Structure formats: structure tokens, C-alpha cells
Image 1 (spheres, helix red, strand yellow):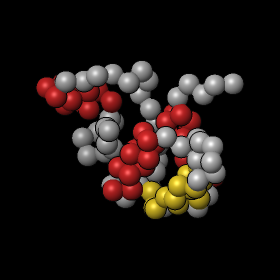
Image 2 (cartoon, helix red, strand yellow; image 1 turned 30 degrees about the vertical axis):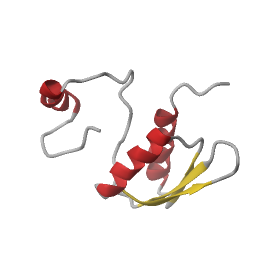
Image 3 (tube, helix red, strand yellow; image 1 turned 90 degrees about the vertical axis):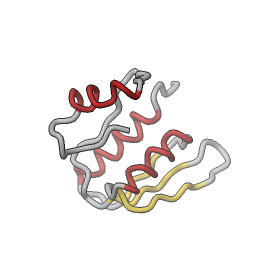
Length: 103
């Protein structure tokens, strides 16, 4: 079966592992979008370091969790938003002004 949205699958597995209280989670398959998204999450302090494991197929990622994620998810389909409308989208998507990030 073909995976339709690998980023959504990765974030769902991170969410489930955080809810169970796990310290690490294995994400597969790996993609450039997932790596960039995890880099942004690491920069903001939501996750610890992550390691890309090369298995000569589609690679895997092991993410160290810090316990700071309440919920993360994907807005699907990915909309093209102009710079002038980013504030409007942020206000409609996030629960409050000082809570969360839109990537």
C-alpha cells in the first residue's frame, strides 16, 4: 500500500509516542520534508536530537523526545499562502497568540 502523506504519518507517530511517555520514536520512511520539519521542531525545543539511519532503502529516523509536545499535526492539503495572508492563517489555526507555531 502506498503512503499518501509521510509527514502526517511521522507526526502522528511522534504524537502517539509522546502520549505513551516514550523517550524515543522510530520514523520511517525518511524524506527531506520530514528532516526539515524535525529541524524546525528541534530549533524551537520541542524535540531533542534526531539521527538518520541509512538502511539502503528509504532510511529511518530515530527521534529523541523531550516531553514538550502537546499536539502536532499536518494541515492537508498544503496550501500556498502569500506573505500578506500568513497572519490571517495563523490566527485561524492556532488556539492563542502565544501558543504554537505554523511552519
